[in-house]
Image (cartoon, rainbow, N blue to C red):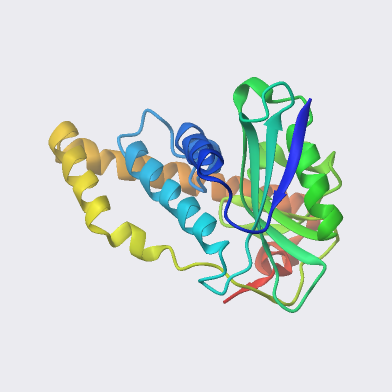
Length: 240
């Protein structure tokens, strides 16, 4: 069993550090491109997505003007140990709506209802909830009350209702992370370690995999919902 805690302000540092470690450990699951550990770009995504989550956790203090909430699952036997987290964004001008930004569960605690408990807590607060996942995860989220509403890139868009909200979803601009000195330094190190050809091959491998997942997601949603839903992206919340 796990204990569920809601945070509307930045979590204590020990919790934050465990969440960021989970992002590093499970970046393949969290990344939209599902980057594999065998890909030389893996370390770059570990840093980039870890920093994205760090920025959102910091934004919980209200300084960015973006509403962010966090649900943490901790081990019932050891309350200091984080076994799962769910970071989501309430939608502006729609008090019932939110969108999942990042979610992960420790491998040792999967299939124990941790994700379900966190999502239930979120939906209890925001009954019109949305998330995006890879095709293989669709049955998992359908069992929790989500339904397929469209496609977004390589992922299937799912919602607790048969449509997305029409209101605005405020998100942080994370593009500067990937232009930062730190990312350039990591890329330079990886070039030195693997060589230019290997890094070019890694980018091609990532892009091929992304294209394959995008085609798979489109085909899946097309079969489920028909042509219109592939083109309208499921009418998800518009991003600021």
